[in-house]
Image 1 (cartoon, rainbow over the protein chains, first blue to last red):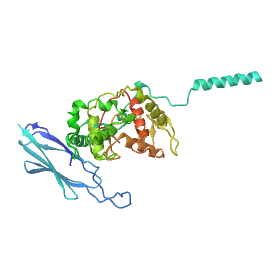
Image 2 (image 1 turned 60 degrees about the vertical axis):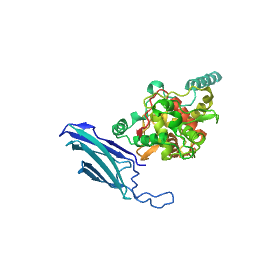
Image 3 (image 1 turned 120 degrees about the vertical axis):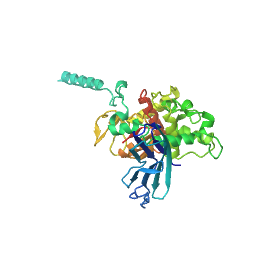
Image 4 (image 1 turned 135 degrees about the vertical axis):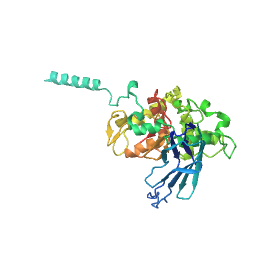
Length: 106
Length: 262
């Protein structure tokens, strides 16, 4: 069960710069750690994050093993029109978790 | 000669009386401070904003577990206790309480596991499991902002006293007690880390070092390992007594769950 926190303003004026905050629960296992028996714990990190606004990519990020567990990503974009903002996190297993938020632009 | 010797003996006796017991003084009520006061502004900001507080990810998980019926019996926490925001408000502020069944103190996670075994007919969660930590945090979160108000129960007194003794007892190869740092040297530094007063105001909490949420028992065991002592096992009576004493010692400070600490 993936746990995600996203914060997008419910309403904004057209042209306004809005701040978006996201956080997802993920171990971000670096691949450098050993388990109790000395075997390497396989790497599994979120390696890509993409945010689309009404289908158009407005922000993306590549992540690396130095990023802490439960990555918090915050960025800004411009409120263009009323629509759906979609977030997608993809990890080394190829699993993609998504979340959506609606914004009303006046 | 003899008169001089007697006088010096009397003086020595007086000195010993004035010096009093060798126990460390407990922290006066006016000087009690949450561990939050000792962390960096960046870490404080992480905790203050629910959107950036990583502990909130466990609160979401805890809420799901609160509502979800268990497979074995179909019983959910919510089925008996109702809305946690009402039913669980203030609970964490008075725990640990006296357990009628065991005739000993029970902490919040012990109570949750007890409920799971007896009422939900489900296997207890493992200590430090994602589920137990999340559910404990969710229940404790309902009391956020409320002052710690230990249960007024005379049956608890001997256990609080045991907890106090454990707190002041020297353990391990470094010959340190909890009090050696947290009563006598709080506000100073141990290596580069500030020494807080050890008030359990924010548990279960997110430690950046752990990269996850953890219980007060985990923290106590961490400290014992740092003292090069054999840590008490999870769920042991000693850890619960220490929790009980620490909560009585922190009475009046507001709960912060889920806290964030370095």
